[in-house]
Image 1 (cartoon, one colour):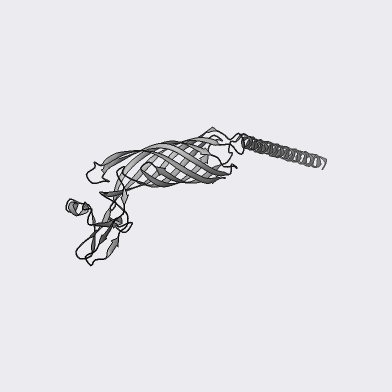
Image 2: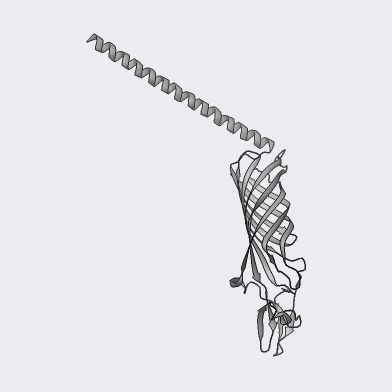
Length: 274
């Protein structure tokens, strides 16, 4: 009986000791986690004071003007460190030829009515769109010294580009009425007869005739963020990019097609960080 009591007491003491050790270990882990959490918060506060955004990700929209067109961009970013982010970009844009010049037109129909046509580009053969998907890196060069300062970032992005070539249609004064044509060797004389042109056809025609032209691109730029609070992004971006396509793109009649498109750009960037 005595031996059984002693044995039971020893087992109880061992269990209590193991439980106490586990509890102490659990308290130590919680204490360590609390210290790590406090250190992370202190680092975030310090980064905010130094003008370094301390967030996990961002979402941005950009409206861009190229020297040869315009475009719209969506960007998703993931911060690897307070200074470096990985970027995913989707961009839609239109490339224009340097010789494009919009003009208006008016003419009399066969019935004697004055017809005002839509603006058109004389000699334009094709409209060239681009759909891009790219990956890249953003690096913080200079943080904001205060809430009224400017953060400076270097951005480098490259990826795949889908060139989309849509034929350009114009509307001509015909007998009777009007007709809408695109450029071909058979319609060259009509297409370039400025006396008969009423105007362009806008977005009406050519969508079922789009030709796909695969390519690739790379661009680099500087982004200047002047937003007062680091949770928001209000920036302007200046940069330069190059696009290369597998086939030459004919944009203007009697002008050689191109596969290589270098381009400078400026963009207004807006978004938020989380």
